[in-house]
Image (cartoon, rainbow, N blue to C red):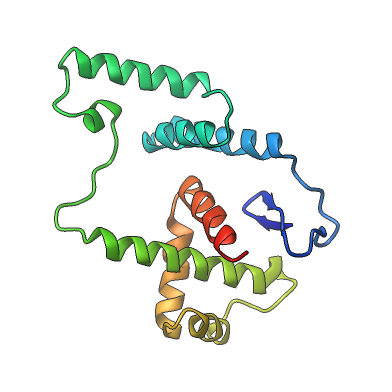
Length: 176
């Protein structure tokens, strides 16, 4: 298992708990993610509604009532022509004009990979300290420099927890 920001992930290679931490069951993990989405939504992050709906669909569980209600209200408002677009009705943040999506996606994937490797090697303070040498070694794994690795690490820290968790799950699946 790998602990990341309050979650435990199953390490499929070893199948052993690290540092004797208890494992979250699948339903506990799903519920924890949906609770985190609700807290993000309550804090004003409207993108959390789509994350919660997507997560519920992917995990084959019921969509949380708060997400279903907000989504239904947005659909009704859109059908009643109160908004020009559906994303406006949902209150979603837009991608700025001129953004290179493919480059941003690659940056996002590398940033989460860098963040994950740094956290694995730091191991909650029990491992290596987070210093330039660590960024240099992790940067070599991703074929980027020390400074870029440090920038990507800090950028990944600034991502909202839902996005980082989703990307972390995808990153860990690609490493299997």
